[in-house]
Length: 261
Image (cartoon, rainbow, N blue to C red; front, top):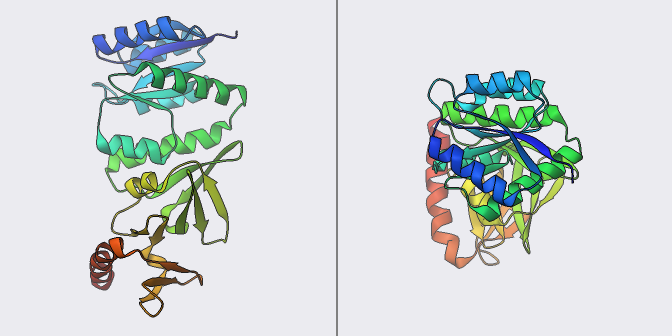
């Protein structure tokens, strides 16, 4: 078994020691080369030792985790973010399809994250693509703005899209098919609920158990053949009775906001 040399970067002693213990007990492929209490200490370890993987806390006094990313890139080290529950941070991490662990760290989630990152390293995943995902995350977190970019797993890599490029998303069993304005369709192993949580609530509407639409691409809606929406791209999609009142409320707000601009 090829071992990965890793470091843990966290300002909290309990978080450092518990992750160290969990890795020793459950992930024999990980060899902990160093433990850092700050970004500065982590930079020194990276400078002196070859490192494959960094377990990186996002929020630390004296420099947040993103300050370490240029060094991680330079030394070609993969990153798994560790974070205490912060709804916004989690949303941004998921939107950029980055590897993360939620504190307190669960053993099974740790094993899955390590397995996933090991596969990525083996595939020599495109580093520039990864940089863009981290950069998007850092921008989202610093601005605390709504999610405007999504990273979708695609073939052997990822595709980054702006949410405005999405016309609608349809459910296909445990998958979702994302329809884009360039007529491309991307099938992703996420259920619609995950997209519903990530996408800007004032711009996207869940109109059916199997459909989310981008209101910017709505042309009209009527009840000639049951409740339906008609999109500018030509598609017609049914609105379920259960979701109709929510849809009409959202349309009211959306048209008011659009009219105010």
